[in-house]
Length: 189
Image (cartoon, rainbow, N blue to C red):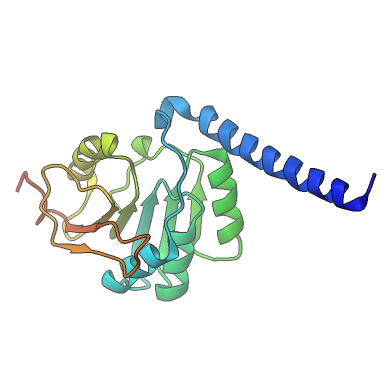
């Protein structure tokens, strides 16, 4: 068999394996995510967030549903913050661990953020599906300390008033990024 055929079959087989791994990782956490897929935040969105929400080394960033860890690693590199991410998708979790492996002060946990207290955060970042945003707003109201900044990509927190809305300078990734501050943005106050 010619080499080009073997190479082509190897490439196709590898792509099928990767896709199968991706599907299995989604199915393995279906009860928790209800089918929500891991979708990495585009670097332009991460840059837009980091440009608009400066942090100090003494602060803690929590990324709930941290995916491949790019928000955690970029925030650590830029600001030196303590960064903590939660991810239940095993493939995304593995990618986040690899991405943040050499970064001291960055922790990625394979845990469901609904079952974890996040009130010690100074900044919360999320890119979640709209069907969980109402429940998330309630969790944040119950746990956050005054002054905590919350950033949500694409979907607003129901009942909360955003302080600003950012739009990345990109024709492909210019969906809104909502910025809040607790309790100023919260409807309960």
